[in-house]
Length: 333
Image 1 (cartoon, helix red, strand yellow):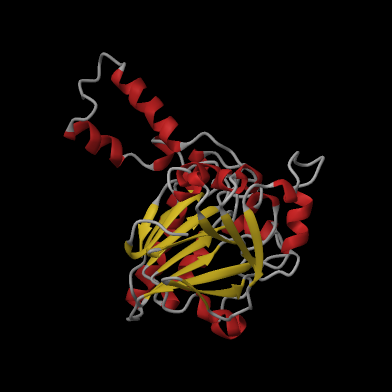
Image 2: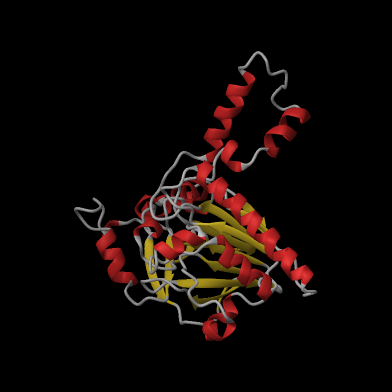
């Protein structure tokens, strides 16, 4: 999947909600807020002015445009290589963007990696426009062996009107080997197992000494280095980790074996493993933007408390630059 050359490893979040899509797009909500403020005769700020934009961008996500409602789809780029992780509803907008390049002319070649096959990670695939254009070549990858069977069910009546064999693009399925690196152009990718009721695999992406750990749909029941064993390599020394934070700590106790974690667990791992940046996603579909914002604030209190304890104990650690994911967010690793 070729694009304009990206110097460093870069990650774009096209969908950050878990389990079920809950749109409206943040950009639409932001415009509504802008329009409402500017329509108020008591507000003297002007759109586009430094004063207004500075104030507007200072608002937290839950007061500005929200966190987003599309389910997981992540784009990873470096050098001349771009990869896609999962096909949640966020992939539809990515597909529309790709049509502006070679995919729109039937000359595109794409690489899509799946973590697992729950609905929220598949739901956007039948609406991924490059699939329908003759001449495009779409490579699909998974550690799980049943990827071809999953596709046959997904693209089959009565679930979807277009059969798999009727798609315009050429589809090729590939199996990834657990914990074995595979080179995709400028990016090396290694699958590691996550803690999820159905087999789910995270990915470590590496490019020129930089590493991104994709750890979404995990309950993180294995936390210590000993418990993680051969999967410790997913986390150790990563520059960026995107981590599952669908629940609060209390909810993880109430929803054992549901396959999702809390942000505080991810911060514990990041502090121990020296991970510089962390982004938390897979927000609960039942949680309003205000609720996600409240959890983010609780996480801030937790992090500040842990840092204070570490300092009091004289322990050496690296500060973690962390935040909750907003749809459309781009992160340089």
